[in-house]
Each structure stands twice: as C-alpha cells, then as structure tokens.
Length: 106
Image 1: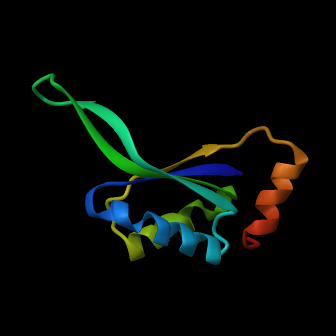
Image 2 (image 1 turned 180 degrees about the horizontal axis):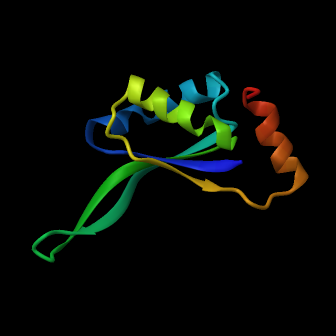
C-alpha cells in the first residue's frame, strides 16, 4: 500500500477534482484529498528564495497501481506532472481492508 502524491501546477490546477473523480471511478485509488493553493519555496539560480504554489493530490492505493496511475495522468493531463509514492509500511487491519476493498484487483 502507498500514498501517491501528485503535484499540479499552473493550468493543470483546475483539473484536480476531475482527476480525483476519474481515479476513484476507475478504482485506481481508494480515497484522495486535494490541497489547493499549497505554498512551496524554491531557491533560484541567483540564490533568491521564491514562494510559489501548486495543488497537491494525496491518494491511497495499492503499490502495483502506481504505474497505471502515472500512465493515466500522462494520457489525460500531461507528461510533466510530478508523481511519487511513499510506502504505507504500517497500518491497522481496518485501513488495509479499506484500501483493498475500494481499489481494483491486480
């Protein structure tokens, strides 16, 4: 089981709800949250710290669904959307069953 993190920037930020609905309808994720206007900071080549924002989607799914989710995002949004996962190494039985029962069999 993993948490999938998806970063949407610029014009793609408006697509967050649509993407979440599609991922849920296709049973690629068990649940998802959308963090709109998430502030983040970067350092430029001139050593200047700049604040910007993006929309962050966090979703729970099976590890084996990662590639399918990335391919879906590439096909339906863009090749340039950053996506990564973090393993859920410990969870209680209820949460494990929640994810398994709400995602497609693989």
